[in-house]
Length: 267
Image (cartoon, rainbow, N blue to C red; front, side, top):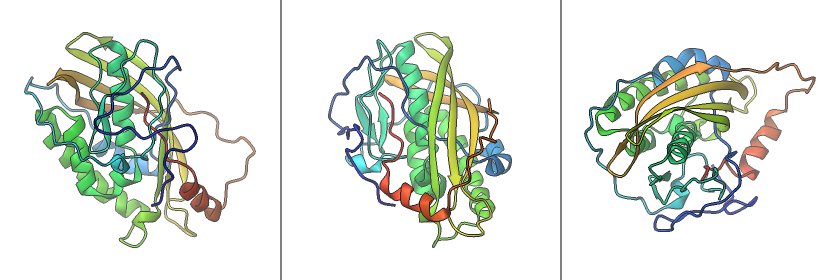
């Protein structure tokens, strides 16, 4: 699905380019999964995993392609106060965070952005590579198994086929983040996200729908970076959805998805 690059004040971060700090507060976009789909797949795709055993993860080699970024190739320069932003990309995901509360928060938000893109939801190969990048080594295999099983149910629930998968709209934004607990070794971060997912086609089993979800990630410091050892999810907080606005036509959704940059990573 085509995406514009370097638009709307965003930039592409190259694998060997150090990220720069900015005083702008954390507010970059992220994604959630539609309400109907949530009931079908969240139990598997966002299942809690046990704590990491302490084994250092095997880091894949950088892909070298900024266009591999899940959720779009653009990265903002925004970061929380005092945060050292990600320093490089692996499989399109920003990695290389500071060993700090702010670094752990940025990692959690970006890891959930990576797990929320259309590419992640429909391409098992990309999904596996992303999970190997963001998960602790002993947690990766189980999460890959769960997310692959959920991906199959996702395909069925949305009526996706090889011909329609590239039409899927999936975008998310973080509405807020919270460090539930922090130490230099282990951090627990909750990320409140809003997003849309669905097919912009007539009579789609799940039309483009919105949802609100809170993800909680337990991160461990391994091999010089924050890695995810477990992920859990709770619905909401969900706002009143009767604003008086009429649903947008499928044609407009298709056009907007092609013409607007995908949600950028933070940091």
